[in-house]
Length: 196
Image (spheres, rainbow, N blue to C red):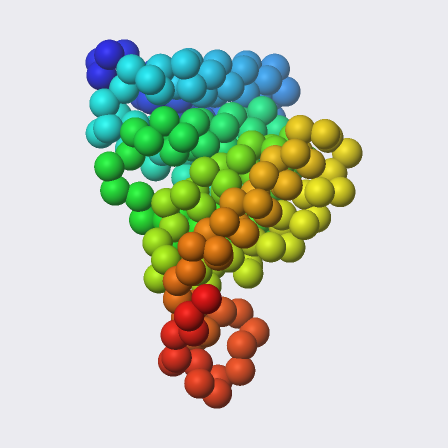
């Protein structure tokens, strides 16, 4: 299985490089988009059978800014879907949720409409891995979750409500909010950790 996964990841990388390089020929661009999407679909199907190291490779591949920020709906949507399914399957050994939230927050402006549902589902799955000492990341995702409840897609709205509920449960568990890491907080007492 590992050999198959490596081959699919290699083919995905090659197709993505060709897609990035193909700027003039519409036919070439469409072919490369289809190839990238097909490789992502195959990786989604392979998740239950992959080792944790192969899964980590796939997850890191999807985290690349040129994948998450891709202007193609299908590529971006499948990347979020793949990462969400990996987290739900609990195939990653060490999940640095705080760092992942930071990377995802940086990509929030590049999210296309078709990828919103899968992004919201990924965020919900990631909240399960958030340690109680990192609750300061929650406020930066509240606007996205609330705005998601107004999406035209019913599935995206449901995913938004599920994300809001997951945030509520995470806050109900209690933890520490590091005010110094919150955007827009005054510098007064910024070094204090506030219990929730």
